[in-house]
Image (tube, rainbow over all chains, first blue to last red; front, side, top):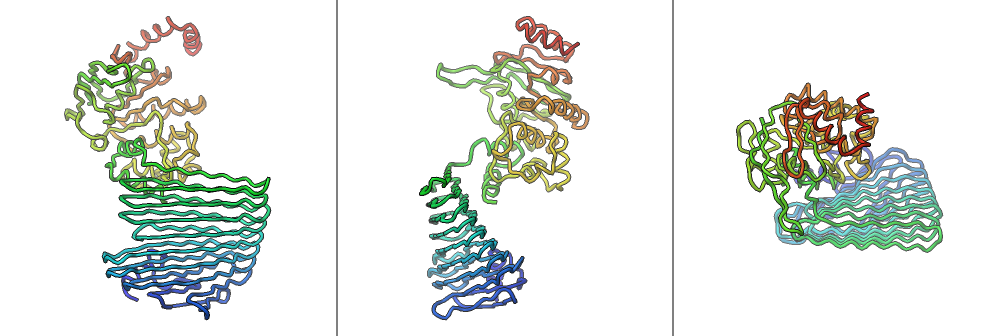
Length: 305
Length: 246
């Protein structure tokens, strides 16, 4: 693995060398390295590109890393990854994709991740997207995440795309069974002429299930962001969706939250706010000795922390 | 020494141009100055002019002999002016610890940051990692705001109505904070306040009313006259003041 690839791994997966536990590193469209544990198996799919990650019931405290890196120009990667998380397991899954494109052709990674979260299982899923390189070739990522949470299951998703992705269309679909919980925190920052679309749809089918979908984003320069969320309360449940965006320069942001209650005991809330950085926030930090640019940076970093 | 020389400020409103400050001249040479006077008298405007948030229409501001009238907010902060807002600003994502770190201008340890919070009567452990957002009450925000000024430790510390929104029980604590600041900070502490208990611990008192500096001098010279006047117009206040005195 070369230094560019090592750096990408560090940024997207906090990986300094080989991680502990199970992992699967995919580089430029092919398997680079894999490690499994007695509780976590990773198998290459036979019918299409991708892997199955199988976590035994009752597995506690283990972490799985499945980073994808693309350092060649013109790689067009499409993978299907399935996560089968056994009942009562409690695990952390770190996924991420880093593209370094110095060439003139498009580099693209489309991942379709499907989660089956078992009964009373608990999953924390962290996904980071990052792009770099000064080539003219596009750096594009289109993740689709399908989440099925069984009775009493809990899934927390933390997704972030902070830098360097020209075009992204992120789709998340979830269904929740009785007492299931889904928490999503999305962080997004776009620059230049980048475009990012996110689309969440949650079907709350089980009794007493809950969902909280929160997106925080900063749109700079001439970038465009579109946020859509759709929460359907089909049973006694509670759902909340929130989109909070800072708009700067000539950027454009649209927030389209939708909540549908299809049951008398469904309790649903949506909140959306878009605005520039408040002048008084800048002034306060300037009275502490920061320049206007430093104040802006602190506010943005805090907002996306 | 902070010197205000013939400071005037006017702003446009629906009725035309309104003079908010008229020819204010003051030398503030260390110690504890309380600026008081009726609402709308120009106190907050004067504080914002000192901090550089507003530019005076005419007049000059000098800090230790240097003309700082045209310096930005940031430059004045670097010269040693701190300002606690009357209505503290909220930030999504920025924590109390971040704000105190930014105020101190250097990396500080968690225990140092906690010290500043304890001084303003907040249990540091409960607050240090909280976001400075809408989940904090007005009183909590005010105390954090004061802690940021303590963390800066500059030669001029300005407080715009620090008592507003702070409950009676915490108020005594606050008085202690200002008394302690007075001993340790050394520079000029300027507090805009309506509270007699704050006026009572000041070295000097200035009265600003209708944009004019009505009186400015040693506390013992100004306060009796000031309280005499207030009591003449407000019997309830007279009773309270007399009650407080006895």
